[in-house]
Length: 234
Image (cartoon, rainbow, N blue to C red; front, side, top):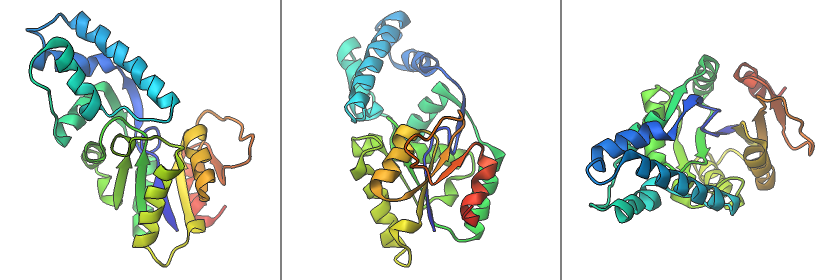
């Protein structure tokens, strides 16, 4: 068995999210002598619409690579760059995350069973920054690789994005086959559909108790505590 996890609302849950929290700190650090905060807030809202349009086309909008330079173009000054730690700080200012103890117990159990585990995430933040956050919560050690759409350029359910993880996992675990891979995620349209199109199993963390009209989810579970059923083939 090989497990590939979604990131947001699967490994880490979001207690609260407010982009303006991190944007305000960003403004104080770099732009408060160049513009009022309301101006940079309005610009951030405009860029959010750009992000949404890109997502509709299956494309990602990388924050550091593509968004940050636009602030310098708009308000002046040098282009701001961020290392992985700084990028992780920015994301954690926007999002108040929490780790479900059941997820942590499940990861520990899978690790003890020597089950290879990976992460495939839709995110405008780079894989290195996402891993920094997992390490801060003490669970980064469980994963062999983490891929982010910020680095790949396209988002789930893109077949090629899934194949990036699947091919690496099978290369690193030659005794396994595609049919033994399970993708665990909470969003049907990206996680279940993407796994189905890639020919692997899916465990749908169906927190909203939605209907699987296509019947594509191999496992339809409501809480992280039910993940153990995957290991038992239930």
